[in-house]
Length: 448
Image 1: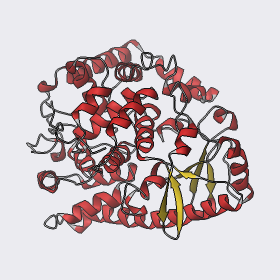
Image 2: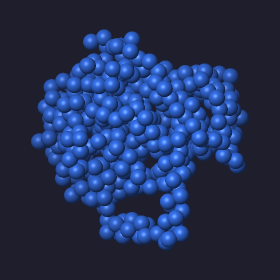
Image 3: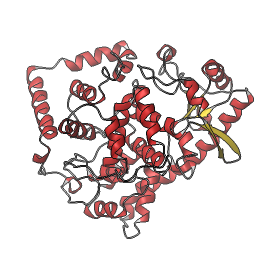
Image 4: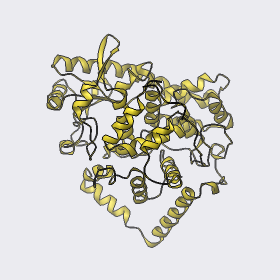
């Protein structure tokens, strides 16, 4: 099916709460980054330390540095850009090493008579991107037949891969789509996840047999590897980002993967719409695609978004979008309440209406908490009256920014990188400080 581009048109946009550093990062997620918009952001002033923190958190340093170099005329002082260059060099070296580890993994599985299908970054690196290094990743994910998963896991344990059981107890993975992660200490901490299913359960419907039946064989260096069909790859990206990560983690990689997968003119959008609906993933796909369109300057056909959108007025979707964007990266603009964040996620994803019943992604992390973590969480919720008042005021300020976007104004005392800049890019800038690399927790595997 030919890709429908005649109905790709820009949607009305309201100001979005993102720092210049976050905007620049997301522009590099595009399949063809807008050099004019990148240059405008850089010339307006970038906090290079903040950009380095953000790029490192998102594993994007090598790609961001490549795009900055493309501009040519942008030549920050070496004392300021050296950090990004060094991070990019380390990332490139890490990816070369990880590719070598991947092929060792495939050889080990083949030696045990186990066929593997490359998921997520590893699979996309050989299909949607020009090279393995073009798709930075932190671990390797492979799908094996469910009945061979335990055998494959034990095979690597026998090969010396370690299992940090205190960090990832076995009981947590009894109903999980993959077995406990394995670490190869000799390979610089390479991490392997052996999957027995593509989607995380929770009411999603996609037969693993269908994924295997439509898998494709593609060349990868001196071997041929098995990867999912593009529509399955896109579905996996959307569900992983919108459900498992709650649209708060791995943003750059998710949006960049969507842009890379859908950049082909022959992407089967009609087939994808049908798959998303049948899999009960329509709203997850809608939000991932919409955010990619808005933030990564990527063409997504309007009829696709219309077919997948939740049954809510555009006014509501626009305000939900502002909330989701405000929480893509840690910053002062993030929602001050976990309860409010969860409620607004449900308002957009509509898990009950979509057929997921009472399942929610945060139930996984709550179920995996230790007794001490439960005690600490309960203590954090017991506020003094004054603290409750401050929290209520933070709620009001946050809701005001979301509901009344055009009242956003420059705050006094902010650094130059947080002031409003009139760009001609895919969205408008706003006035928040650059994010820091301090989000996530060791027990919450859904936010990895």
